[in-house]
Image (cartoon, rainbow, N blue to C red; front, side):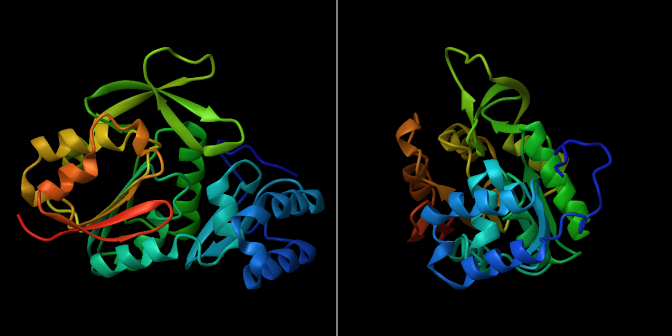
Length: 278
């Protein structure tokens, strides 16, 4: 039995707990090399053969309903307990209990909910996700995890306030990207807000850490933010996806270095930076 991601009254968390056979496959993957990316689509198909629809599981101490069939991110978190662990540990190191974390391109919350657990009820997490289906899943996971400290923003972070078009890769919902120039037939219109405005409306006066993954649009979000926002609002630590940097109009990592950020690490997907001076 499946469930629409944007069903206004979805079944409560736990309704799609893995069956015994599904749980055995998930456990086997998590303990072996099967957790690696090359095997995950096959495992996802097998899980779906046993019972169609999502699965409700814990990941890094938060509760998630994973629609793994069409989302590489959700497959990764479902089958690999160390998924994005280096990035998560970096963010946790630089975000204190009671701190502020901003997730630009939050997807279903695999960063936002984990950091929400870390900062605790006295902290604040701002999760920005424009795609309506993905945002509905993000909202469900926030409710399932009982994280009132997470503020959801149903908009794209962009260089200006207005609207943008986003297009979805049918094989990977998490890879939705901004469409510029000629519009595609399956693109949808979403609100666009400047990051500084989002932070202001959330009542944030500082940011301990920020993660951004917006499929090649990172420079359009960050370059204007750093030009306009006061240094007091600049995040102390940043995780930025660099896989689509060939689509950047400006090298926003070089811009950040010029503003006092130091690169302290790099994973296959992300560059890790810390603000060393103002």
